[in-house]
Amino acid sequence: MNGANETIHQSMRLKIMTALNVLHPETALEFTRLKGLVGATDGNLGAHLDTLERAGYVTIEKLFVGKKPQTRIKATPAGRRAFTEHVAYLREILDARGASG
Amino acid sequence: MTIDPNDARTSLDDIAAVERLTYQAITYDHSSFQFIWWGALVFCGYLWCFLSPEHARLGWIVVAAAGVSGSFALRRVRRAPSSRDSKLGQRLGYAQLALIGFGLVLAWLISPISDRQMEAFWPTLVMFCHFLAGIWLGRFFLLSGLTVTALIVIGYVWSGPWYPLWLAVSVGGGLIASGLWLRRMG
Picture 1 (cartoon, rainbow over the protein chains, first blue to last red):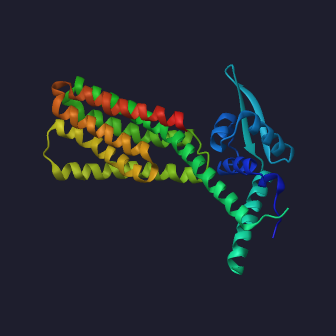
Picture 2: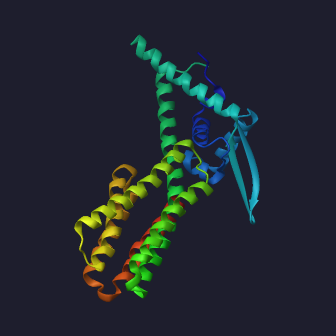
Picture 3: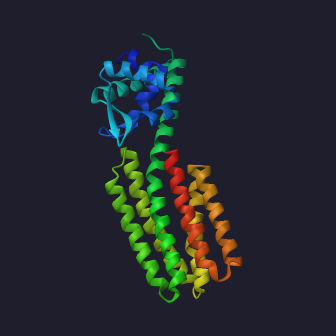
């Protein structure tokens, strides 16, 4: 059994990784859309994205669409792997309780 | 770090909720283009019926062909953001073909019917499917199906010679407005 992933397990970061993991590996999500999906404020989301980026779980791309700045976030292969393993770990915890109870 | 089973359950519930929201946002975003595309075509179709009623059937054949081929092309151009969405998109494409096939059989079975009845038949059939889809997909499809059907009935009874124009605005415009709303929500 793989252990818990402390970086991903934090509630907001878990939601961020969930939303990004739903997308195709090549597809990025805009900052504002991600904010709406996970129910975060700008500052809160930015801080958690920094943590995930430092862990190598997401890439953050800043670009201009016309004159408007846009931030796009994508899960890296390492991030997807870590998320999948963490979800499997969570399920194993529940399965273990089911087996013992 | 240890996680107790209650915490694990809460985390898995959060994951399920965010997954559902994300899939819904993706579905809305992708459906919006289909709604706008079909809305514009239907608007043109009814306008054509009003301007050239003797060639109405030819116009609708062009609309159906452009609608289905355009829908498949839109899906190719706008890459599906998730594998589940890609399968959903394919199924929606086949559902459109099936709907047209069933509609043709049904129209043949209940014929002869007047052009006025036929012009109400297709959008009512499509809106009935929207209503059914709404039972699974949510209030938006339920309401749009009911509202546009009500507008079709009102136009059928009261719009007189302006009937095709009424349908162009209520059905075509309704689909376009729905598409724009979905785009905003997605």
